[in-house]
Length: 209
Image (cartoon, rainbow, N blue to C red; front, side, top):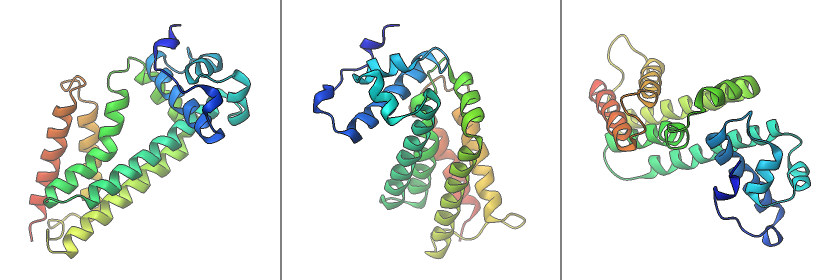
């Protein structure tokens, strides 16, 4: 397996313990995306991270533990991106589109071109179904708080008659997830951004003051 070509690494002797752990997680993410979970071994991850195999086991007890650490890493990345989107300037549509992109765009960037995505989704479901549910709920709550903040500042009104804020969030989540998996996009990042912005436009228009 030609894992040495994945990325140039920092020499192991210059890495701190935390840096080594991060290098292992990032190496695992690249290899799982490129080769799939089953075909990637601890040896492959160690080689890609440029650390000894025993160093991988010093930080992670198994390949599954590396996989779960990737999920935690991605959760942290989503939180950072969400915070940046919420703090950004622009209209309500701009910020809502950015908030949708913070979550759905990240997964699209990492996995949309991977031929191993079905296997990775199966592995995520098998190893971390509850944790993924927690992360989804965390994001849904954040999205609902953001929409309520728009209502509080007068940038939007409330949900249209017959719908609650939770239902607006559910519609946005399902629609954005569908856009992320739409084969018509074929890995086109800009096309996803346009689709998410269209969703933001519709949501804001539906909640006119």
